[in-house]
Image (cartoon, rainbow, N blue to C red; front, side, top):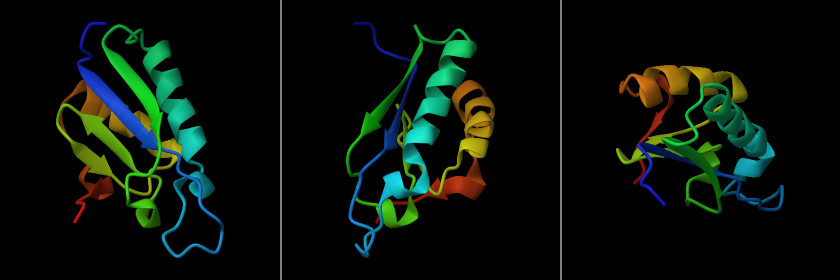
Length: 105
């Protein structure tokens, strides 16, 4: 397999509703993941980019969490409506979306 220009990881971790750590899946993380996949496909980027579902990234309280490599940029509270902005600004143009940035401890 060739290396991707960008690899997008979306946490879809699921915890019980009463867990104080939160749960990315309870915040529509699967829909966020699916929107990234659609955007990659519709833009003809499947050979250069990939979106993957991942388990816990230890930040679900701020979820859904999205991490983009190779830069290692983390995003928090990402919604389906944010996906196009992240694709345009960061993934395609190299400028992180500051209002969504997450800085893990």
